[in-house]
Amino acid sequence: MSAQVLIKEVALENVWRLRREVLYPERSIEGVMLTDDRAGMHWGVYLDNEPVSVISLFKEGPVFRFRKFATRAALQGKGYGSLLLGHIMELAGRLDGQSIWCNARTTARGLYERFGMKAVGKPWEESGYTYVKMEKQFKVQRMEIIPAIDIIDGKCVRLTQGDYSQKKIYNEHPLEVAMAFEDAGLRRLHLVDLDGAKAGKVKNWKVLNALAGKTSLVIDFGGGIKTAADVDIVFDSGAALATVGSIAVKDGSLFVNWLEQYGAEKFLLGADVKDEKIAVSGWLETTDRWVYDFIRDYREKGVRQVFCTDVSKDGLLQGPAMDLYKNIVGQFPDLHFIASGGVSGMDDVRRLAEIGCKGVIIGKAIYEGLITLNEIKELC
Image 1 (cartoon, rainbow, N blue to C red):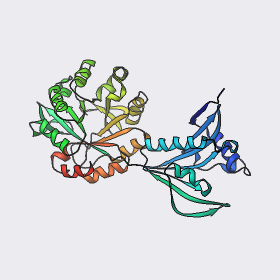
Image 2: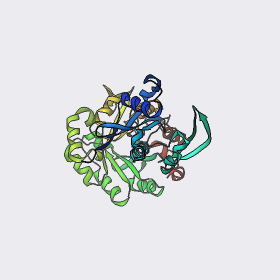
Image 3: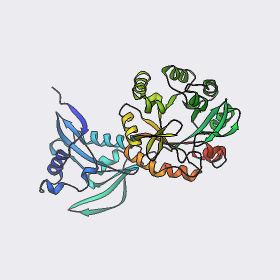
Image 4: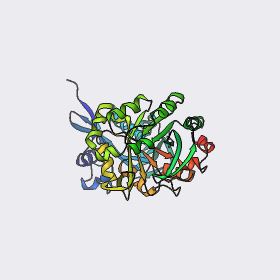
């Protein structure tokens, strides 16, 4: 019977045991423990339920580092180490790492080079071994700019902090606006049915249909989605994703049913936030639900795309809620997190990219000319 090979996370006790056996047999278990081991991700190749190769991976912002790569002596050269190295390379890339590196013994340099790693700097001597830093740069995916079109009476408008009395009409023909975005190289569009949000049912589906039919933009559509019939209208009219916020707060069981019926990948979850707590009812009502708990609950249900709007920032052009977004990205590094609200220029966009946001929804800054389509073209 062939042996069963499995890659999975490893308990630290097993990491230390194999690390000592392979790398430092002269030391005690305590002598191979590192102070920050508990901050890492520890992976291993299991052969018939026994770890035979282990590695420790650490994330430092967008940069990953691995260390203490150890494969049982009798099984070296049989591909187990390569299998594990390939796994963490794929994992770091999937988590949007910019690069990955390690301090490698020069005797293992050939292995790392097979995975696209290159020597950086000069080798050095330490504890009787010669080491060199090996590094691999990943292709960095630029943060996606997602323009917003808000619709009232079929026209492109913007509100300030969700106040319908503070409405400004920017264009009576949303299709013209959407086509200009597409010509600038943008690929996505955040389309909001403000009439629908106010009425409690989808109203501007014809606008969605026109934009989806005459552009190639990937459109997420929200506003007034309260029933499965509304969800059907949104998808039948050409939206790639349905944007849901209030229902996910007020009727979580219904939203979970939709996730199961249509697939979690078909929804963009919206989180309106005030003082790190979820706000609903046109931002007039703040709940006791922490945004982190809200995101975690639905992430566990399969949701992978979330956008968050700090209601104190929206429409004011005074800068986004950087601390809030940094905290969210830090807690959920594998989330496709999109910032929303307060963007006042390209400096804000660059700062959001630096903290790890995957996308940013921008409305007023574009319509007021603070971010131009030419600047957007340079990023696309």
